[in-house]
Structures are given as C-alpha cells and as structure tokens.
Image 1 (tube, rainbow, N blue to C red):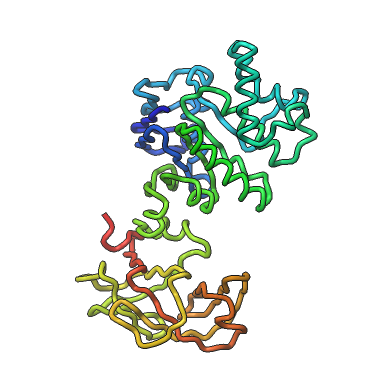
Image 2: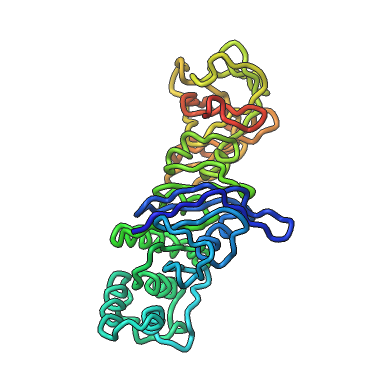
Length: 358
C-alpha cells in the first residue's frame, strides 16, 4: 500500500487553468473518489497522478518520492479506463497477463497471478475467449483483472462504469468495493455519478472549477455540506433550496409560512437560502415541536417509485420535492400537512456558504 501526497498542484492548457492549487493527501489503503460536474478537473487530476499529463506547477509524491518527471510506467501505477482498452486480438488470459509479460515476469508467476485474479473476479471460465465474445460487464472485469495482477503502488479508475447499463453498474460497483476490501490497495476513483461516489468512497473529494470544494467521509459531506454547491450536488432527488428571511429566531418563507430556525442560526438574521432534503419532509401527525416545522402543501405532482413516492408542491416560485412512503398521497390536488426536521436543514448565506460552516 502507498500514500499519495499532492501539494500546490496547478495544470495549465495554454492560458486555461484546469487545476488551481490542489493540496491533497490520500493515506495508505484508502478508497478515495474524485467527483464533480463535467469540466471540474477530476480526470485531469487523475491523469497528472498517472503521469499522462505533465504538471505545470506543484508536486506529486508517492511514498515520499516526487514522481513529477517519471514516465507513467516507472510510477508503478495500475489504471482502469472508461473504454476498457483491451487488445481485441488477444485472449482474456493474455489481456490480463499483458502487463506481467511486459515486465518479463516468469511464466509460472504469470499463470498464478492471472488465475488468482480471474477467480477473484469470477471470470475463470472466460480466460480462453476474446474481448468480442464478452458482454460489457465481462470486459470491465477483464480490464480490472489486468490491473489487479500487478503489484502496483496505486490503483486508478477513470469512470470505469460509464458505458454500462444501470443494473450492470450496480453489480460492478459492489464488485469493485469488495475487491478493494480484499486487496487493500490505495485506490483513486473518478466519477461524475454522486451515487457511485457515496457508495464506494472512504473519502470523497468534490471538485469544482479546478479546486477542491470539500473533502471528507461521504456522510459528512451529505449531512454537513460547507457550501450550497456541495449540498446540491450530493443527494437524489436534489436538496430543495428556498429563499427565506431569518428574523427573531424564525424563518419566513416566500408564501408567508414560518418555520423555527435551526440551532446554527442563533444570532443571525436577514435574507438567506434554506436547504431541505426531500427525505427530511414527512407527513405531519401532530403539532410542530421546537425543532420541527410544519408546512401546508398543495400537491401538484405525484411520482410513485414503488416503496417511496416523490411528491411536488410549490412555495412561492420554487417547486419543492418531498420523499414520502408509498400511498401517502395518491393523486395531485391533495392538501397535505408536512413536518420539517429543522435540525437536518441547512441555511446558506448570500455567498453560498453554509451558516456556521468552518
């Protein structure tokens, strides 16, 4: 296992700055996920770690050794790409063995390592086939197998599941997490999918415009977002954002309804944005308490998903989504009293920072 240290990393393409001073440490054995919208710099950051892009300024060190000017092959990093990058004329066995043969590993070691990787990934019966005879999920397993047979210092995954359908993605996500538990290697995974990030990561690094917006354990980012951008990026359905006015310990909404202010709002006042996750709205069964607010909602859209139902209603000009148990409301037009868990809400100031965030 290896430790990765990045300090003051900048990357320019001409006058365009893709990475703007990245400082990051990935401890030994961690599964770290880079996530963010298209163009945020996550793939560029991964490629600089791999040596596929040159660093403009700053340092990348693996186990204390600065690798800025090392060739990709000399960094001893295994990488899994989005497009699988398999050799179509080689068998599955030879695709997995390719890196070992390039390093002139003994034949007995090649057979042992390929066999172990194939068994781990459930593709032993496929070793004699060629890539064109495999499904997308099987090809991805072969690509992962080619990486895990190597005694690499770091494992890098560049959006490896993007080409798979939803059901295959779910299955492969579980396989990758299980694989990490088994081999324990330091792993960096790039995705634009926040569900993948939340379910896979020991730590999420959320990037925005070439900078780290926030990093930490998945639930920390989900429950304690430091900015409105983080709060809106993580979570499906997305957090509801309502323009409000905070005054005298109460939150006034655009339609005149009021909610009790959360503890973080003590001493604050003025126009703000209130963030409420859909799952923190529930059908009210009684009077509101000191940390529970109440909203009267006229439902205008109902979207059943089986076990849950997404309902929508308006507060002022904002469409609000509530995630409720199935059969809570059957059709649009119903009036529904909703409770709001104010301890789970977040207030954001005009600059997009969470109130009370450090």
